[in-house]
Image 1 (tube, rainbow, N blue to C red):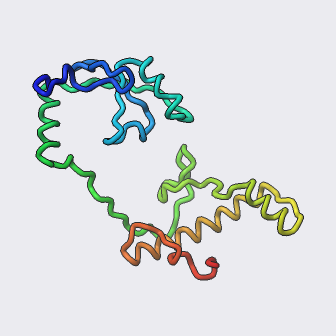
Image 2: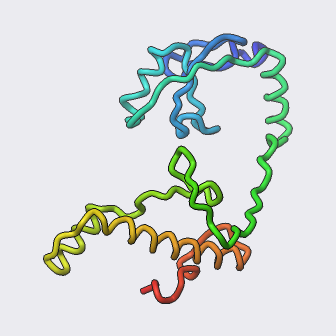
Image 3: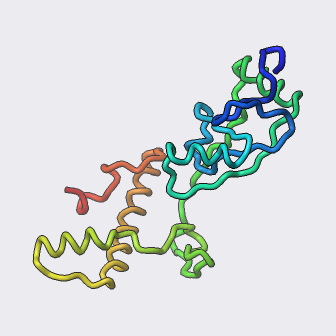
Length: 181
């Protein structure tokens, strides 16, 4: 690292001071600030705060990390230089769901087997706006639950159709014909 003319591990993204090896530094918790090409790191919290007006995050905080040792940094640099890719995550294999769904809910509001949230999927304001514009009627909040159930059923059918085609992406053609325009 010093052979490259660099005094420390990396430079602070705000003040450009070197961040030494095996010291505490800070990163933003927002994923767009932590991508490989962006890779923002800060020597202290005040430097992290400098990027907030530009980044305009809704909710963020600084996460404390520890920089690698000189040897670890050299290994990482050698791996990147040789084109060696970091280990990849194993590919997910999705099995068909059992026909009967469990109705027992976990503490987070998800059914135990499906792991899909059993919450409202309909944007209430948009639905109310549509009903009022097309008919002049008002809309009860209790309509949202049954409509969400219908959307879930259609989405599950579309997922089954995508799975049958061997895809991991649900497309418009996977939606049952009676629900397409």
